[in-house]
Image (cartoon, rainbow, N blue to C red):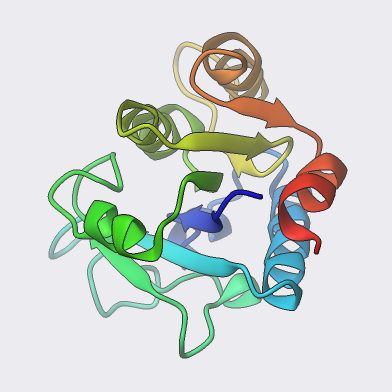
Length: 178
């Protein structure tokens, strides 16, 4: 059995309150993963984006906080980042190595930015990446609606290339139970 971590990236108040695509389902699915991970004594870690002073993700502000419905417990690690990848200029890699982690269940926001960059960085470091369906999300942009961005990245970019995109049920059964 692999040494698994559930990594929750940028699920912060200001982003969730901006109503990303499929918000309710994504949050509920992340809550199920957290519950399963905690029940099975698998580590849950959080990554929080710092977008600088005056931004909606300014450290210490309400918008910067991890979304209350999935908030970490006192013992769960939170990594602060200033770039799209959770690995770039953070201590995340050293932390995962120290814990012997080889598999990352990756969830959060935004699909085409921080989830994509973190997925590819993790892949470059040799991690097995699991992307449970309907656990990452984003917003419409001037080129594509959010649902198309979600589908494109999950099923054309990541699956069978950088990660395994599998159902929530299979993620829990294969990686978080027992």
